[in-house]
Image (cartoon, rainbow, N blue to C red; front, side, top):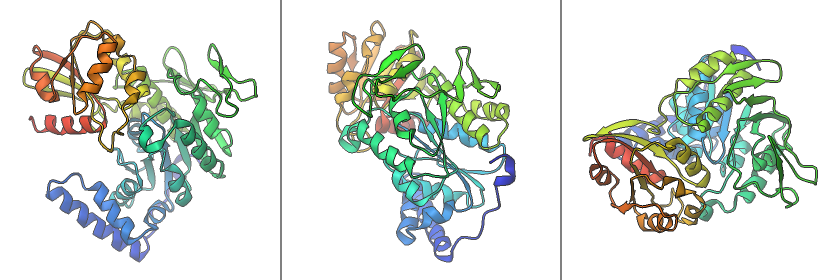
Length: 420
């Protein structure tokens, strides 16, 4: 598929689907007017309740790209949507509503867009693939996350492996530096391998095929059973450029901090280029993204400039701690354990918080004592303040890094937006 020739005008929806979309839109607007949220979830739920085939109907005759994985989905989806917008209008759930109701709401909000870039929760991807035949699935990474909801990551890999093996006409752009992702995409009909320079290895120490230890050399990994890192078609080089085996070289410059976001930009650029967007134009458009649904935003709060960061699991915290680096700014860490976060906080012990030693640290959120115990064992000096914004006010004027998991992040960004 190349250029805009594959992006056709949208056909008329079936009558029942069109009616469901209209009523879902009314429910969404009512929810927003009542101050109950953005309305995407309730709108999508109403549409699906009235027309169970709405997801398939709304995707029909669109170029659909699904983005999934444990970390980086929202950022990569936002970047890829910007890149695809070079060719045509794009329907996108860039607010992170990544279950079927959120997908349906995003599609319904852009009924005439010939392209859709949709973030999909990895646990829901098989069900979505049962209804939709995407042009591409972008598979970023797989690591432990919400064990009480999703179970062990090896189970997620196995389920994704079976689902992707059934996609006979879908390109799977997959991270060959991630052992579990490679296993999940190994049997795909049309895999395209990319090496984004992944550094997290915490969940790929053993082979998902035979259980033996993975052997690592510089830039390579393998198992004696024959399962090994495939040669990538796309590679992020040490200098930061994205290269293609065909000789293409594209500089990657992102407005977002950290090497992880250079990797997200590489995925977005490679995916868009594979779908016909000129690679340089794709990289420029995607690299201009400077904020993703509140992530990385700089907010003024009293006498403080607050940088807000989201981290939800060991792999995500590892990358976020790299972003913090040796910066002397104080850090407020907020952790909740509601349903959307996962109630199991055992993952805190897999995060190397020891890198925060010597920094001024405040622990906050609903599960601040769990985090405080972990930091105490890591010999990280800190104090406790249940309210993250009150914690900020107790710090000296100036910059502050606020790192929070999902619901703590959602709550604090909403409060910062309203200045309270």
